[in-house]
Image 1 (cartoon, one colour):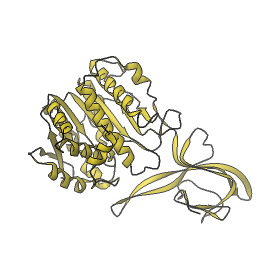
Image 2 (cartoon, rainbow, N blue to C red):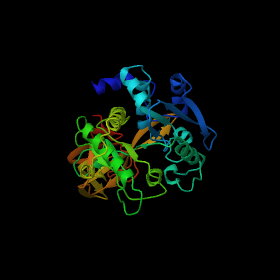
Image 3 (tube, rainbow, N blue to C red):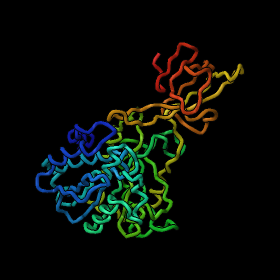
Length: 384
């Protein structure tokens, strides 16, 4: 079976942008609601509905929630791709529905999605509210967890383009974590099942993105929802969708998330999570902050008549402008960058810097400038 082709056949074409809000997904949910699988389970701070979509009749129950952080939409898009597959009437779809019951909350934080922010409308990070349960969205998720009684939990997120796979120079296109259930980061039966599942997913993904899977830090924080659910005895997996080369809209990464979802179902169905795979899990390199979006090396700058050769880095800032996400590059580091990689790297070979403000870069300036007066850089990218 060509799984990549399966992705393209079931890809939800209406979801292409980084900013996915409630208006984006409600028509799709209505289309998929062929047998009363859709239910409003609560409301956000601003009164927007929080939807649950449940499908399947199998004994293995999986709770999946996405956009707990409103500006993290890649796993949401891949979730709808998966739901399209499960609803397409194929033999694979029938098998999944017979083996599993999937309870999906595709957008836990619709207010944050609308505003394109990590937090909810009260400026609370829902992934730090699992104990206080101070927010309506947190209460909704906990109520579904307790009523559904899942066998597995999938906590679905995006991570920034700054993360790499250790010091390999490869971006962390996907990262995973079996959260800790106590401060000692011990491994009990529940966490081991999550560890074994991640090990299997990683083995599968190496066929498609070799060396581009990372492992998230497992420091314990009971206020995080994954740590809480793990501590309550339910194997929980953190999915983090990250950067793939030249894929700032994350549509390639989305494909790999879809493949990770599918592989996880196959691994669980085959009960390939009973062996001890701790060593394989720990062999997945940890995420590390080692990337800038742009690195410019060996650039000549002029400070008050004194010429020096230096380096600087720029990073995209995602800015919501008239309903669209704009990637605007700003200078964020000047000087030593030897311990970092750039998704785009330029060696100026001593070329002179000049922009509208002078002969040297400054922190928080837009990455718009000239090198030797003829090479033009706009928004970090060379255009002439």
